Image (tube, rainbow, N blue to C red):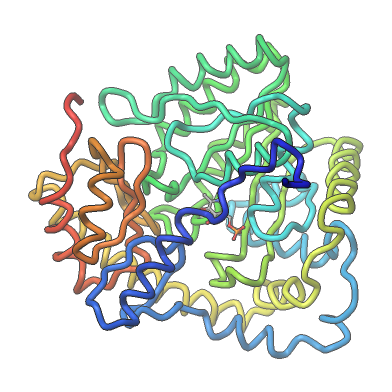
Length: 413
Ligand code: PLP
């Protein structure tokens, strides 16, 4: 007999992606020439985790007392200022830095959790695109909320903002409020980055639905540093939502990918609001949730990230090292784009980022056949996720060729 509560008694043991990765690594360790395109972290061409050395150095130099002590519940003020500077510093004299009401979180995951807890009542559903990062659902589930989707791509393969608007309208009618998660640039799992016209249409849909009830929109920018265009354009394009109080704009910020510190667990939720009193209310709500969930975050990690953002010399080194990692990844993306279409693979526009997704009938069976010949990808509903972040450029031709043999593209547009 189990002492677990019934709703938790049959939880799946392992995240399926971690399980696939473990199998790929075991076979590689036994000498098989495995291509492991499952890992959600940037690896160098030797298969080692790519780490920005200047960040490691800053971590080593954190004074012992600063790392050992408790951090303030919502994060230290200098860390939160550094996050705002990192997100908005380049946005040509925009007001966002002054509008920020934030809390430190364990990674971007913690930021998503805070958003779910503070912008949806228990039992309500968050809204995201039909392809989405699986933990969105886990996070909703764990918090007693659910997840609904809008169709991500229309017949032309572009973001389906008409369906987004329709689903928002439905949710606002049923729930009286909505929480939308948007992951762009470099969407996980599809690799898609919304272009300017798509952002404009998103803003239009939110403005259209805003009179029906409060809408909070989380911009999950975990991969923004690897995108083909600067985040500045997104910040500027969405500014009118905050200015006009049409929606509560939130950024889920993470040091995991942008500073190559996945294990450090440093992130933040940044809400934008023009009114001082509302910013205080947002910060109180966030820090209350922090206290009631993880208490406070990694003090040493926050201190190191603050330094690499604010110390001009260290920052310049981080920017240089990150640029060379981005160039490594861009090389793989370019090779992929050159080879994949001639092999008959169908995938969304892909101009940068850790992943792409190949549309595929019968994805679980195709993934099994690929695995049998040492090519590991992650099956999803109607697609296979391919993590180019963990595949050396020299292996891209073999990867594409194997996908070309095993993937049956779905019929229709
Ligand atoms: N959002 C997306 C889409 C992700 O893929 C990830 C990590 O894989 C995250 C957010 C958050 O990562 P972390 O909690 O490590 O910052």
